[in-house]
Amino acid sequence: MSAKLHLVDMHRGQLDKSRLYVGDHDGESDVYQTSIGHVAVSTVADIDKPGPNEDSAAIVPVNGDGLVLMVADGVGGLPAAKRASNLTVQTICDYVSNAGEEETGLRTAILDGIEAANRALLELGTGSATTLALAETRQDYIRSYHVGDSSIWLCGQRGRLKLQTTPHSPVGFAVESGLMDESDALLHEELNVISNAIGTTDMRIEITSELPLAARDTVLIASDGLFDNLLEREIIDTIRKGPLSTAIQTLTALAAARMREQHDDAPSKPDDFTAVLFRPDGKASGTSTRSS
Figure (cartoon, rainbow, N blue to C red):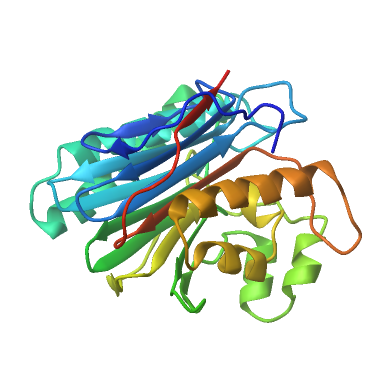
């Protein structure tokens, strides 16, 4: 793994309140048991970048029977990218925490939170922007919301992708339309050019309907630090079964190794890395680690 990520302590956690990851540490990794399933999180700052981790993430319990999971990736090259992702997840958390018990109330709170975050970034007047990938989940369904090229996947135990959001980018749309394959996309010079972000006047939110969630399905939400360094099959084989603690640690280690060593036949792009996994069945197991 990255030299910035080393084990400090180990424990199992019970999640009973919102948990935010806003770059206070170079690396964080947690596994939680929740009222409806198990969540694993890993976030690591770019090993080659002197600045802070510009990714943010959050896990928000909702009314005892739901979760809102999100990852935001501050747009690099623009001012205050970390502040943009931090402000976005914090604003949405505030709205979600005050949502009513009805499912329609949660959907409205999420959308209102995203819109409020967009207004807040525009009001900063700094040009700051961020992507967002968010999943609303209960025991038996998931609904996704995304802006930009952070992505949400829903993977069955046998490895079938039941949901794979399309990145809001020229390369993402080219792959979706069949004009470009995965290998060419990962090596394309405009891979990280995005066409949609929070903090822009024409921001748009892509939202799915409720999708059924089977007992051993795995939800993945991640920034492009994962998807730019691992192939689709590598990710699926890692997350589709086995303990979430093992899956999140393996994803982190594989991505970090790929970032450090470039190979002609494999993707490699140093970047901040954040991934969240959720599974609605099984026993919680894993570690919690901090580094500074």
